[in-house]
Length: 248
Image: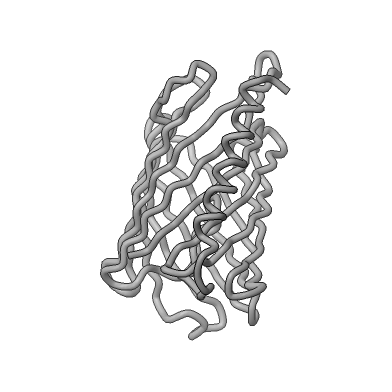
């Protein structure tokens, strides 16, 4: 294991300890049903006028295609969500990545809007729609803009939530499309603790990931999410993620 990867892991675990120590003061309470830690969006939207700010840190490594060498990286992600009505919300996100040269570069960005048709559990299956405009840096160091409509299906079984996302991404420069389904499971173990997992696969690039994850629903509308992404098929990236979200 190289020195940079060790430093990534040290920073990652240090931040976990600091956040847990700071947040464990107070009585636990149920919080907003947050999105899964990667790209699986949940059915519920923010209430009208509600704002959520989120920061998450990624630390891990990816394999280079030509040499197979593991290259470590850190990513800083900032996101904000806003409830326009009780059933319609918007959110935006910006990601900066710090690579081997310790220079921060703009990695990706997105703007998304989401609408749900009914209250949760009014129908046999909850259905919502989402539309996203995004851009992401590819392996050739070029930004690839895209638009992404999405269907969201959700079902609660007592304390267990099952969510399926069916997004189709349209790349504006190349004209290519990608079907990227994702599936999430979450179990509300206690008022404080939720456990879950997420699977995502890109049928165009043949890249997949499996992400076991855990939520801590702290007082004052604060949520801490932890997870680790294991890449499979052609996915050459493994990383840990810690996210902190606060609602106002």
